[in-house]
Length: 160
Image 1 (tube, rainbow, N blue to C red):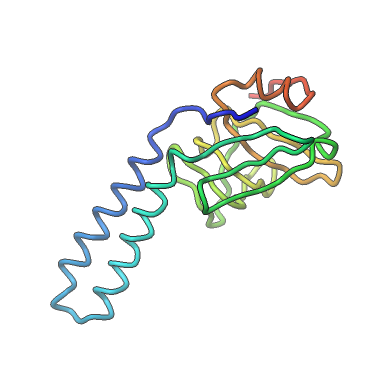
Image 2 (cartoon, rainbow, N blue to C red):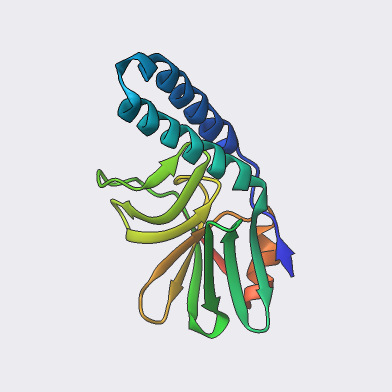
């Protein structure tokens, strides 16, 4: 079963990042090729992540939850490892991570929960936290929370 993420404007933040970086690279062209290349690289990074945004999915098949963000993130979590599913609002910690309004990817630090592997269209609001047997945390934001919980064989507990 494949599930789409909850809607967000994370793609717009990435696109805005790419446009601003592209504008900076144009402005820095007179400053030398190194500055221009760095800004162009950042613009390409923003465009790459914006292009992958529509490909975010959560797939439950063959006893495994696969969280993916196009070709840029793919994480496989055996359903047998999941001990609980909790809906939570997370408070970002001061450590750097890949979080924007409407998008959180990879490992992100949160003040109240610690490190969470995120594949979500929210940086902190209404995240489903999957806790594993080992205590690892995974954060997802499916549009159909109930459907995902049923597919995972779990009951969602609320914590706000």
